[in-house]
Image 1 (tube, rainbow, N blue to C red):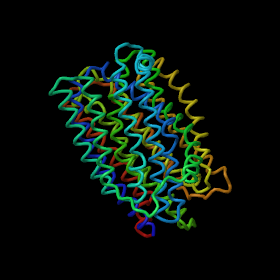
Image 2: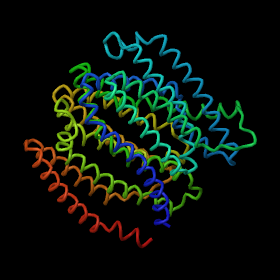
Image 3: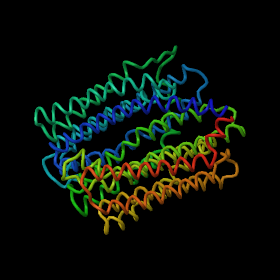
Image 4: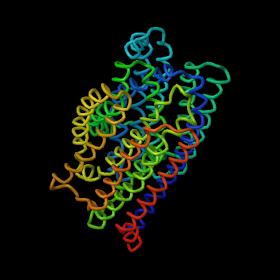
Length: 484
């Protein structure tokens, strides 16, 4: 049974991962060209627009991106499920129109508040328009994921990514439009993506209409997630905000390139967590076998993702020197740390089934709010002495604290469904993981030529892989899975 569960989750995760990886590879291949035509300040402007959008989106999305899943899976038939998707689409369409109008009317004031620079109001409005379009996409994307139509989801994602990145190359490089080309390209790409997802969606039902009771239920479940999104906003963006205040847009631009490279890990963490929610919510019999299966899957995630994240630390310097302009060299300091933060973020999602099963998702917001406050303090202290490195350390530590808190909460609540965590295996791995990070920081102090940076990175990576391979064999994880 365990092999069947892992196979089912793994199949959808691999499909999502392949699709996302193709998109990330395209983004990575594009990075050397964009960093040659966009200055660190340009990247800083784009990053600060994104920071504002991440702040404002939870209000206008009303928490629906998180609340839609529990409501959808609580329905007994496909007609009611499809009605839930349609009602969510209607709500987000109305709120996105409101966002568009407000962004247009207040574009100059808002752009100045974000950048502390004049003359970027029109570009700000275009960027927010792309955010409005992406918000309306949410129910469409969720429908693919909830019905486990992973392959169709990936095909649409890849096609839209190819179009979007090709358009960016054309506008930014061929037409020499620079920052404006990037922002207009993002809008056009988002519109095409929305169209492709809409065309590929198959919703059928006898009564797909607006239903007040369904809308109320959707809002009742979704709105409590809004504080949660604000907390995630602080966790993800506080580094940029403080860096801009202390060091300016150029520092934000360099930091953002490191974040972009580190976020490549979301190809995998995002694939797993995307498949994870419909996977664990589909369990009707929550017995001892389910508990053991979920615990083993979490251990599997820790081993595999932790090992991959270590490669981000090891290869950060040679990758930056190879792929980006010299002006962005210090971005290597952030890559591994941001990848580590995303690893912990995915692990946090993996630990949520007990809270969802108990229908107490409001506590997710509470835990995230506590960590968001801690993150502000940490980032303020660490960036003061260590700049963007401090911002990277802060986000990694903050997400680790979030993991610890949700573990403690699940253990504290006696009435929750109990997952059989494999403590010995996971704690042992994390000790090795921490030692590996410290060693990587130490060896990065020495500067070598690009060729020898690659050689050193490959050598360290091989040592780590051999060590973790021995650890996996000794702990007997694979042996247990094969038995069951």
